[in-house]
Image (cartoon, rainbow, N blue to C red):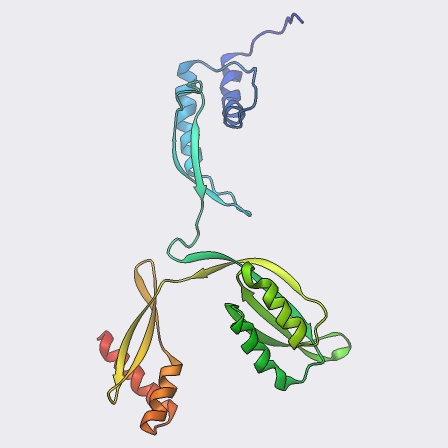
Length: 239
């Protein structure tokens, strides 16, 4: 149909350019007229500057990597290349399934076996937390962190090894610092030392407890004495 509407002024065209960029980027048809090249140039610099400040908080946070013009698009369109915004770039980020169940009627002597079985089927970690349930009954919350690929085996252990008849699951993000190992010696026996780095700086060192127990048994010493000797060796190693 013929239209008698007047075209938008240059000032209005400038305000429409950001909407035009969104429409063009989404491959949607648009009948908006592009602004003049002079206005487009102004929009490009301000649009790119705004793009570099984008921080979208939510399930998929992003950050701008670059901005510019695409040959196939009008010169008024600013293309912003966005990438996921990583709040902890120096740690390994993985998605895990966290499974929980509240249990108030299980013999407490069974819990060590439950934890053992959960780790045996591939869970990253498993733990119990004391809680108080309705009617003041003491109970435990069983928590398990695992890859989704072994989640069904984790469910099987919970339902067969405990008295739970229900559970809940949450998808979580796990951050793990890069780890490396060194060793120290106590009376000629090696003990592994695990170190963790963040942003290229060592932030933690810990003595492997299984090695402490092994050396204590071999030397006939208390585990505490071996641990203290290992920690002293770590301090000397850092000096």
